[in-house]
Amino acid sequence: MFRSWFATCPRGVEPALEGELRALGAKGVRPGQGVVRFTGEREIALRACLDLRTALRVLEPVGEFAAVTADELYAGALKLPWRDLVAKGQTIAVAASGRAEGLTNTHFVEQRMKDAVVDALRDRHGFRPDVDPRAPDVLIVVHLAGGKCSVSIDLAGELLSNRGYRVRTVEAPLREALAAAVVLVSGWDGTTPARDPVCGSGTLAIEAALFAARKAPNQERRLAAERSEGDARIVKRLREELAARVVAPPAVLASDRDPDAVEATRVNARAAGVQLRVEQADAREIGPLDPPGQLFLNVPYGERLEIGGRKQLKTFYHQLGAALRRLSGHRAAILSGNEDFESAFGVRPRGPKRVLWNGPLRCTLYTYVF
Ligand SMILES: C[S@@+](CC[C@H](N)C(=O)[O-])C[C@H]1O[C@@H](n2cnc3c(N)ncnc32)[C@H](O)[C@@H]1O
Image 1 (cartoon, rainbow, N blue to C red):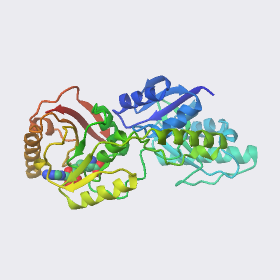
Image 2 (image 1 turned 135 degrees about the horizontal axis):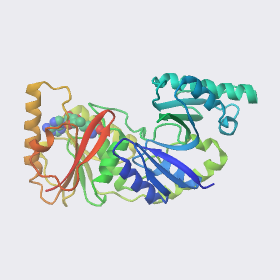
Image 3 (image 1 turned 135 degrees about the vertical axis):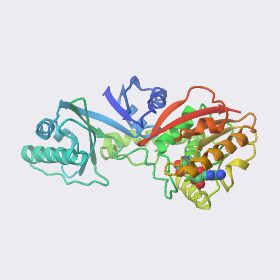
Image 4 (image 1 turned 180 degrees about the vertical axis):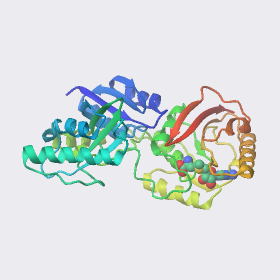
């Protein structure tokens, strides 16, 4: 059935997600804030779950009503067609976001919503679903904004961004969907070598390798929607199609000066099923790629640094700029959450700067051609 869907994403990533949706064949693509609406058959939405790199969730909208108080939330939720959405024996969970005048506590909103669903099914249909917050059969997603409550079902059942490969982390890991956005926005076509010289847990390098191999980032993931036989059949066919698309990627290198980061990247790359060349190195001493290629960096922010630390960080940015500008013919996409970065780095960025949010942290993505 042709209908409308939503895909959510980190703030700032909407244009990248919009591009991905168009490439999938979605119609009526309309970006909002942290969300892109689209239309299409159910198959497009299931494909979106497996193949989108920058999405957090793919949602099937089930209803919208005015609600600014707990009573309005409960009453509105009672009226939705829960019997069509939750089968006897299935477990549920609720994930809420946003706020309204009288509904400022997300956890409370989730509780009231769950009460309404359970009461509606028990009173009208004689069964009571259990709640399973970890792996629910049906994840109900609630968003409050502008005095309205919109309710949807998450087709995957959990965040698409949690790919499952991040077995080990070191300081300040990037969300996978945000790392993927950096790769897509960089304009790299995935045919030249790439390197992340400040790789941390390896997220950017892993997303770059997945992109270059044309691997769908959630190809192996079991979707909540697959509990329905019809969807399971479609997803099986899509998985086969996506697996046939995979190509051998160019070399993707990852390095960090911290040995724990090097080890974490090795472990995570193995879990992601991608081959990275991982080594311990100082980013200010790296040599050129052969042939010249693409650099991806999420530079240290030093959020909690004292004054002396700030100076040290500026010196590091400056030395990094001096080292990277020597890599002629290379391009770089650099994500920074530190306002000192641009001037200390000392190279003029090419193309527009983009603001991307890493959770609550405002970051800027700069692109360079050396
Ligand atoms: C913000 S973290 C990168 C996080 C990474 N994007 C992730 O998702 O896990 C910055 C990394 O820069 C590394 N680093 C700091 N100074 C460095 C240097 N001189 N050479 C190489 N790596 C360095 C730190 O060890 C840290 O892992």
